[in-house]
Length: 582
Image (cartoon, rainbow, N blue to C red; front, side, top):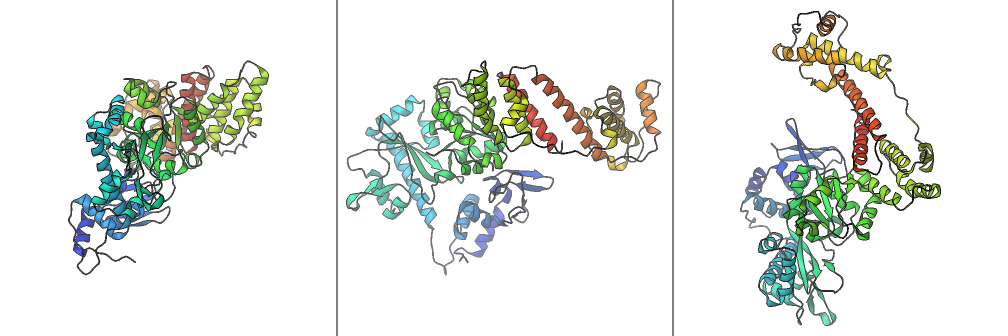
């Protein structure tokens, strides 16, 4: 049970001034659905939005996990704050001054003390970078990366000196009233032998790390020169947990939501370079491997993640580790790999003025599994039978792990074409072809061509009859594949817009095949079919048509070429769309 330290009237003012949609939208994806709002719930793992928002009352409720409450509850649960800290945060956002109840004890909370200590450290280090004589090498390093004062200010880059006393920051923070225990708990200092307090960072360029709220919680420090480790990060604290943080996500989250994808790079300088180049969707891990919790964090804002690592062994290894994680598969994330030119990373490309190459690499990113399979196959001489067999044994375990039957079937076909091995043998290597489910098909549609034509004619008959329940059904040109039916639809489409629902459409005059078809349908007195079901069936037929065209095209393409990869992925997308209901 909490004890509110603020006056009730101030709390009510803060509640009234806070928009629940904007608040939730700052940490996860929110979409408007009719008159309501839906969000991906940040409190449990899900693929589709199950959280409903009520902006009029400032409430939320998740039908997936049961989480719910008001704006204060949401801040408490999503930010790890108590009630009073939530009031303080929302009051600050709304520009409202709140006063403590004179009968309650005044307190600030541990988290706020830690954040304030890190915020002061950011200012100390940035000031040191700009003005201290011993920061000259740090300034030279940043100028070499193309960073001017504007970049230093925007990303709040700083410098930790390596002086003989080794306690420059400690003395500054003590002068500002920060307790020694707070410095240690914030990861800014540590005790040496004899109990003396020393700065945690020394002789490093510092990149502040911010959480989703935009609060500074730690640092990534790059050493100047050849010392080790090259990068040193804040140790895990209450506010800095590297497995749950992504550098740059605080500033990238809105652009990621807008574009629908995020780009994960390897370092802080890569993030800065991509943001400066207009690619504001870049983030990086904070001195740790990409993990399940990072994917869980990103899926709040997008369903596609592009890994943009350099082309060396370390970058390839990072992609390999990503393939071993659980969340991308479980959360149905589309994880892809953008290959950089060998020896270069995103920061190098931007610095050399090759931003277009970087953009092209991201846009042409290949699915992670395809990238790993192609990389594995490239190790073998596929002109030799024994080598082809070894190549199949190398990639089969990867394909066997694919849970989606559609994707697995396409990757089996891909490997069969790339290696020249019979498809049945590939299936045997990955554990056998899945049992096919028998699909119930209506008698009139067992032949796809006749079924499609009959459905098109039935929908056109509905259009001509123009019943009231047809008014809300969306009908488009692409539903009609038969030339005569398609032309008949085009002739009556305009008349439908001018005829009130419930009144049959006036028919054109003439003896041509199109007019004859319309007249025949108008005089057919059979009961009318359900228009929604007809539209769904026709969309499925059109999907089948497009899938057939893509399969024919794949058979003519080189499996190692870019056009094959793009066609292959489009085929998988359409198969999944069909399986999902068309």
